[in-house]
Image 1: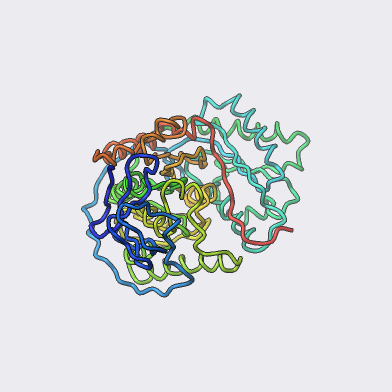
Image 2: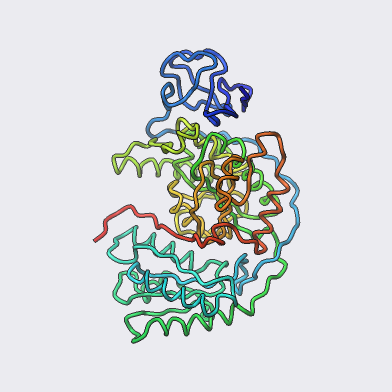
Length: 470
């Protein structure tokens, strides 16, 4: 049987063929209680004696993780490459930020206007969709009957979307009686370009649809005059995400995305890694790559705060991987996390961002938030990501408001779900180097190449919630 040993110290290998592709096999006899080593790190311990050649999975492994931990800053030396120069064709906005799409977005202050916004977007696309990159709305159930942090989170996410450079123009659509009504939301926005951002309160118009369409027609006319210009690659912001992972995620697609992250960081671009629960068990790798002690402390707080969130709700901190992950060969959270953090590459962690905050730093950033796919891509979009690189071993159609590049971890998935998958990382398992091809593909997407989520119209958001709904 063909197998792959990832690290010289591993006592398991990954099976590359047969029904158990992506699962682990013991390379030697392993005693009960002994650590299972993969990627050079423990991914749990043996529950029973395991013989050489036996299948190693949930029936004979248990996680080593439990509770809150104390951490010590042990920085690793990171070599910094000479700054590279390069450009792509993007849209330079009036505030200096760069977008990669020229879209019109309808942002709802409250879920009560969801269907209204969809009707407006449908009619607007029929009338003027060919004059820009499309008119879109992203429905959500919030903006009213929320208290405290939940209300603030909703407002922060919506603010991030209103300010997103992929949108040439934005219509902020409100109902009129909601907690997050337009006058209140304007206080959150603080500053906006009156030519780019327009507001409409549905309760104040006899025909709110025609009133909205009048506004959108003007926004489309403005967008139609925008042209792509040379922009520095340093101005790109790229999200790093995985979903529906399998045993090949940490071997093919995630390391490919990690090398892409390192490469664009050398040009001065920003990349953002999220999914905090999927850092548990591999967090010290990120902590010790923090640029300084203050950033290390931020990463520690990021990890422990999310563990405390689980504990406040009396949930098991390490309730992961998902059933689909396990079917694909991922056994414990350490196993999943060590594969997940491959997307971060090897660069220094420059900053930690809260939900709804915009990216501030060039290089690799960490963003708080859960691993839930739709919530995570929403958080990345609101942070300012122009696009998201999304690896998957099981397949998923989900898409963000921004181009969402689905990277298959294995060739059978890429061939079976070609309507979802944008790039196949499967050949890496056979030794093929796809780094240049993937970089060229990402630049092509930045310059207008449509991803499958765009072609299919799969664009959605889900806003993080942690409190009371009235």
